[in-house]
Length: 393
Image 1 (cartoon, one colour):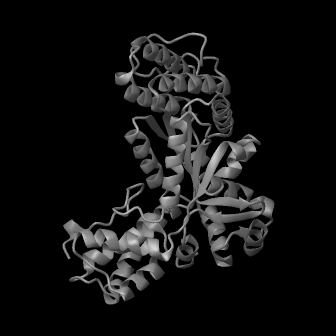
Image 2 (image 1 turned 60 degrees about the vertical axis):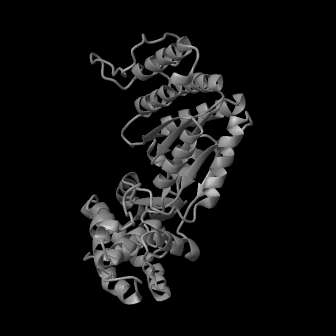
Image 3 (image 1 turned 30 degrees about the vertical axis):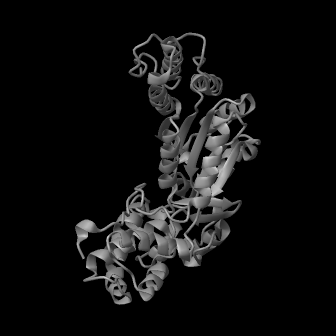
C-alpha cells in the first residue's frame, strides 16, 4: 500500500478525512449560528470530553462554519499560568479585522480598536517599571472604556462593543477557547459575567469553549448561573457505525477496502476513540500489502500502532509526572479504569489522603487526571490505566 496515499491523520487537533459521529454537535452549532444571525437569544456553547475524542477538531470545524457565514472569529488556547486578557484581545483583534473591510464606517472600527488597545494594555499583573504590552493596533488607546483594570468590567464592556460592530454588519463574532478548564478562576468568573451580559442584551457574540469533562463544574464553581449560560455538549467514543465510517470512507476515496473481520479487529483495538481509530488505521494502511485490508493485516500492524501510542500519546504525558505523581497514577490504575475514590488510592499507597493532596492537585493542574465528582478521580486520557499497568512501578 502506498504510504503517500495514506488518508488517516492521527494528529493533535488535526481534522480526520471523515468527521464521523459528530452530526448532532454540528447541527446544534448550526442552530446556534442561525438563531444569533436572526437576533434570537442563544447560549454560548461548551464541548467537553477526554483527550483524543476530537474536541479541538470539533472546535476548529465550528470556527470554519462561522467563517463561512462571514462571521468574525478568533481562537485562543488557555494556559493555567496566563491571564486571558492578552489572548482575548489578540483573538478579538483578528475577528474585527475579518469584519473591517465590509464595514461602511471606518471610524466605528477605529473607535473599537481604541477600546481594544486600552483593554489589552491595562494589565494589572505587569510589574511596575516595565513597559506594558501593546498590540499592533495603529490607533490611540481609548479612555474610559474596558480599561478599569477589573477584568470582569473590562471584558463585559469589550464584548458589548465588539458585538456592536458585528450588529452593524448583520453578522456575529465567535470567540473559541480551547483547553478552557485551564482558564484561571478569576478569569472564568469574568468570562461568565461577560457572557451573561451578552445573553441579556442579545448581542451577537458567542463564546465556544472546549475542555476536559470537569469543565462544567469549573464554570459552575465560578458563577452559579453558568449551568444556564452555556449549551453543553459531551462527546465520547464513536459508536460502531461511526468508527467504521471513519475508516471506510477515506479508504474508499483511494480505492481501498476493509474486510469485515478487519473492521471488527480495529474496533476492538481502538475502542471507538477517534484518535486511536486514526492511529490504528494509519499503521494498518502502511503495513498492508494490498486491498482489501484484512484481519491478518491488523494483527501484524497493531503492535506497531500500540508502540507509537505508548511513546507519543501516553509516554509523553507520563514523562511530565514526578516520581510521586507516577506512584499516585499507578495506584489509580491498579484499582481499575473507572473513576476511583481518592480514599482507595490512599489506601493502596498506605498513606493518609491528606498527605497525597499535593500530588493529586499537581496531576489535575497538569491535565493528567480530573475530579469526576466529589471524592472521585479519573484519567483524562482513555486507556491510560492500561498503559500504566504495562509499565514498571
